[in-house]
Amino acid sequence: MKNIFLFEEKSELRHELINGALYETSGASTFHNKIVGNIYFLLRVLLKGTNWDIAFESFKVFNPDRNYFYPDIAISYPEVQKYFSEKPLLIVEVLSNTTRKFDLTDKFIQYQKIQTLQYYLCVEPEQQVVIFYHKRDDGEWMTETFTKDEQQIELPKLNISFTIKDIYKS
Image (tube, rainbow, N blue to C red; front, side, top):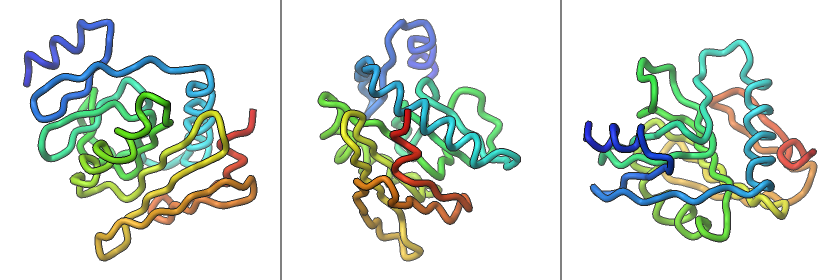
């Protein structure tokens, strides 16, 4: 595992580790970057004064199988690790044509193995669609899809909520 970290640290490209194999991640569009920026800024403002760790893009999240991924945004319980988290509460992925299927299926399956994860937000960058997965108290995952400006996404474990318009505004 240490050799993989050294390789990743020196590589100009990012890779995700899945079942012992490295997979190159794709670049991002301007739409993608705008949405990531909007969400990151929104979450920073809403969580100001709390102890939550908020990271984006070049920060790894590990699951119990020791697979790691680079979510677009992760909010984690405070940890001592400098370059990764094993305890995210919220993961945000901004979808693209090349990652959509993987993010909504295989990656979500891997993320569900993380005990602390409560929320998984998948955001379409070029149209106003947000797919919100949240874990119920019994451990079952529920899905909601949001498309209208005024619809609220509630994150009670973080004690925050925001509208779809907050994500997509310029």
